[in-house]
View 1 (cartoon, helix red, strand yellow):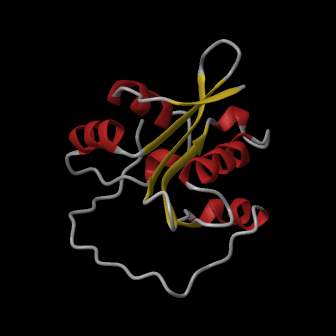
View 2: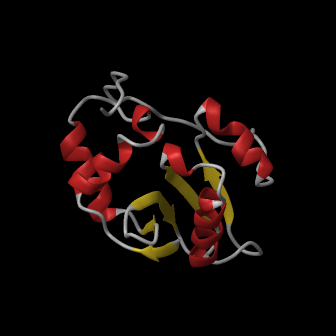
Length: 142
């Protein structure tokens, strides 16, 4: 497996989402247009690939490179889970953002992913605020 900073096309990312549980976190409204903006603009864009070059994991993150890192997307292909890919993506993103001694990591976890993040040493936060006024119709990328 290799992990590299790489920009995916919207089509590549959507195809990957179909192979993960991550595809259920996005709203239906303007999905394709918003994914295109996401992959074009996110400051940290990491892609894990297997030896054949197939995408097996992705991580997108927002950071100020000094104090905080917010993971917006972390996904691993269903058939590649429990191989350390998610852990390696998180470690790489944290290092790029500034490292454990300087940068706090935040994210919004799907309920099914909470045990994974707890195994990484993360805890639920009581100091995160939310302002959500967007259209949000649940669907799963298929």
